[in-house]
Amino acid sequence: MLSSIIGRLRLVGMWEAVSYILLLGFAMPMKYIWHQEVFVHYIGWAHGLLFILYCLALLHAKLALKLSITFSFALFIAALVPLGPFFADRKLREYKSS
Image 1 (spheres, rainbow, N blue to C red):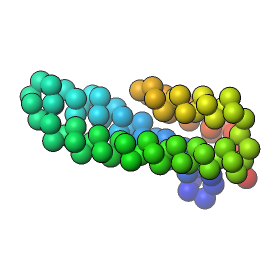
Image 2: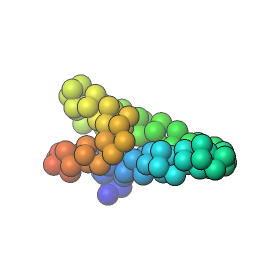
Image 3: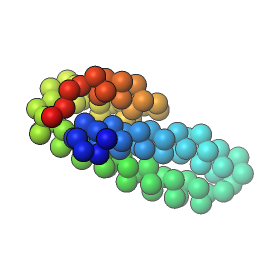
Image 4: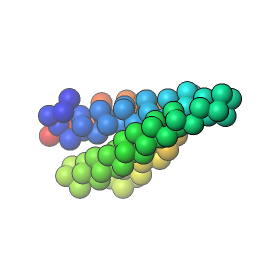
């Protein structure tokens, strides 16, 4: 999976999606229900880093593989939606990379 540009994008996308789900489904309830802000701090930091890595991997794929602007924009928007990268992964699996 790490040997191709699309494989790296898919991997980072999956980790970014998991971190987003952990942030929204675990860390935020811990903060607002049980007043445990430490989870938001660390999971939020990890999610932010993974989001930046996803954007960089997407930019690399866009430039190296000449992805269309529409497809690239759709992949970016998918990262902003909970569970979005899981749906985008289906399209990326179909994409033939070099």
